[in-house]
Image (cartoon, rainbow, N blue to C red; front, side):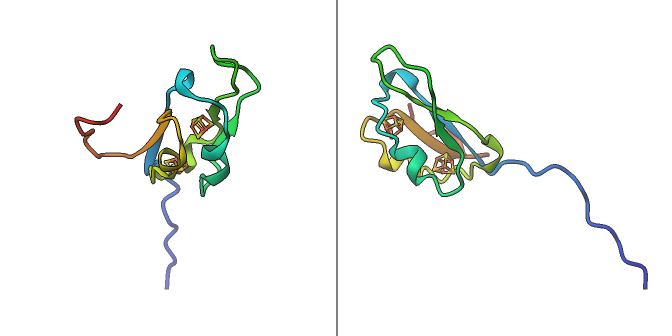
Length: 90
Ligand code: SF4
Ligand code: SF4
């Protein structure tokens, strides 16, 4: 029997995350609770003087929006790729 090699095509991320840096108050909840470690906290400051999150590993984002659910300032949200934005989306 001949074994066939599985395709080595690059994985397409299942979702993506959007950060509104200037709304952020730097609490870190989003980075702390992201289940796949997509986010890290920036060493830089936003205009309010807080450290916002940065996307450290975009390929790992599932678009689950857990970051958005934890954010007290509506400064971040995740979207599943292929999903049409709703009218209430930022
Ligand atoms: S949870 Fe919201 S306010 Fe807190 S660090 Fe993340 S984006 Fe900023
Ligand atoms: S949408 Fe989910 S996987 Fe993507 S950054 Fe937010 S918490 Fe992490």
